[in-house]
Length: 284
Image (cartoon, rainbow, N blue to C red):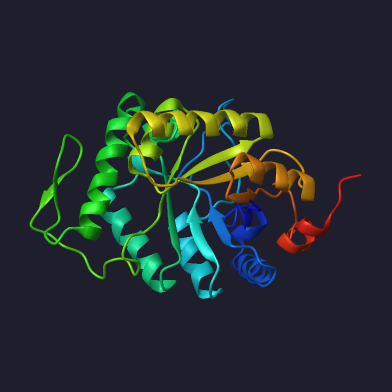
């Protein structure tokens, strides 16, 4: 198996500039990248804490707004959230935003979702971290009811609505659901409700361990349909490394550029890691 190649961080740092984002998105599409991915942090701890992945002054656009911009600047590349933090977003508003992106892109949305882990962010947005899993599950079910049910309704501890509707529904009959997270619970969630699983910054050994855990979870749950696997690799890529990830069963590699690149450096990075170029490289 040869994985397809996607590009991460399309709403942050240099790509937080709209002109740069449009330039890089068009370049990636022309070079054969199959997908563009955006990150989700509404706020970041200030001053930065040990658990925070980014400094608080990091330029980071809202992922759904950024995807709408990328949709307008591209024609066929897929557009993924990598991943939306479900418990800290109102599910009805999120359903409307995601459906809008899918309509504006003519059905190119990949809905990546996770439960979050950054406690200062969760608490600032009114989420008790201890309840984030239950809240995330309810939010996901609420989003899907608003998308797919003839008469949307949901009654839970954290979400309660009926007698409302929202149109347009997503362009796709079923929006692919990508579950992010490295815990056993995330593996079970991906197997139970997901079309795909997303692993972030994983080397080959860690990837193999997660895939084994996913296969075990699938066997235990009796899942009989394939689970697509996307991984953001935690190592430099060449043809041999790409083949190694593919040999493990990875369907897509989502490349994470260095965070400190200028616009021109980011363009160079995208060209150097183009799918065709990776396929042609040989490790020394």
